[in-house]
Amino acid sequence: MVEKKFEHNRNSLVWMENISRKFGTITALQDVNFGVEPGEVRALLGDNGAGKSTLIKVLMGVYPPTTGQIYFQGQPVTIGSPYQARSIGIEAVYQDLALIDLMSIARNFFLGREMVKKVGPVGFLDMRKMNEICRSSLHDIGIEIRSASERVGSLSGGERQSIAIGRGVYFGAKVLILDEPTSALSVAETRKVLSYIDNARERNLAVIFITHNVHHVYLVADSYTVIRQGRHVGTYFKGELSEDDIADLITGDRES
Image (cartoon, rainbow, N blue to C red; front, side):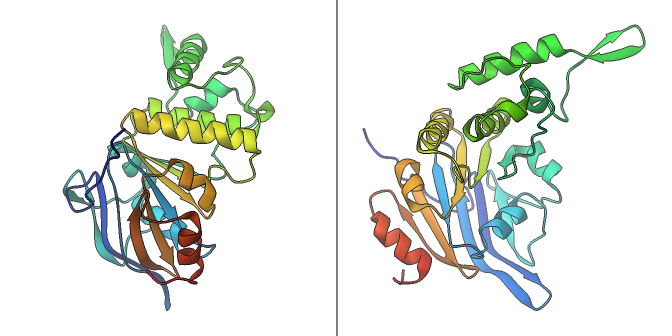
């Protein structure tokens, strides 16, 4: 198998150029470059407080960059809100997953995008259609569920991750951002989530995998961007560094 090499620049699917973000007198990010291509799993690595979440919140439109420019499909864009980010194909799966325990899998899958059927002037949720689409869509990307009517609160951590990932894939995400997706999962469930990431790459999605767990990203990532104290340490491709090398870059025990 020939490994892909990706060119990251303004013509990338996503390119964040010289991104800085200040909160008053505090500089959370300073001149960070970051990009991802279709069919690539890009790891965004850094210790707690390194600036990973701030960078992604800039990409998702939660925070505007203080300086710098975001390019999407080669064009400069201003992303003013998470809704706008989703509208152009950038979907984020956060640690809290934004799932509602008391609702069914299908209701969570379509949350905010519910399908409605009209009976005269009155609209009703089309649960039968949502259940069918939810189950078949998850099956298509290798995720099996017992029933789309099952409450999300009864699912394991790995199963909950699978619903959130599947939702992003179904609704046409071009970029899937996963924020610490293997945090607090068992070994078996971690393997499942990593397999879902592999599946997303095979479907030519660009995947941004945010974590501080070097071992997990080393198994699936094509490239690695390390940031430390809000600054870009370096970007490396699969095979260029060992797990220990990456860990040392994260902690500062090795310079780029």
